[in-house]
Length: 260
Image (cartoon, rainbow, N blue to C red):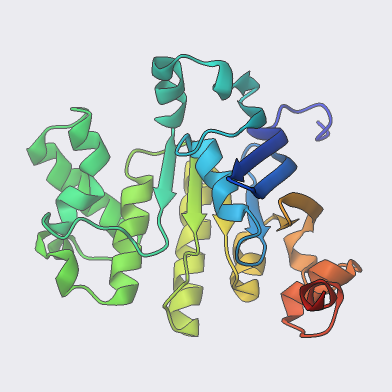
């Protein structure tokens, strides 16, 4: 089956969002296919985080369409949209673990909050998910403050996958980690996404991470998608803007725009 015949897991069309006089999204069009991993690249203020927040329902776009499995979520009732979003998971940039809860409750927070699991079973489920990200069950009894940065990322990943979501969002998953731990986290992300058969959308500035995590990549600039392609080609795409960003070069079309 070709991409043209397959319904995207996520489809964005004409997505626009302004905050006051600042137009952050200016007609975003993007397809993320089922079971694929899409990496979204872009400089600070380019609109990548706002795009993700629109998909998650944290921000309401001014115009456009957001489809998940062919259904326009913006036209749904709040209950219908909640049911769709319940199939998603999220790994936040700084982990966003609850300091007042032990690790096992953090991991199963969503399942417990929705009464989908009992507390005794939640401990077992947490141990199972922690093992999948390379952590011992005993870590479940620790508090987040007792964990290293890398362990916190692993726990945050465990929480993101505990409900076995169909779609997982990753916001700068390697931020604050050394290169080796960053590669470890990337490997765990790839393993978990493949094991679940999930669709993944990742925001990152880390080009090595983007190549490891992504099947495909998209670059957003001034609120528009300016390129999509194979993540493995980042830095050698032939698109001057994308290659400049991927290589971290000062000179290029983006720098020229900044000098105006």
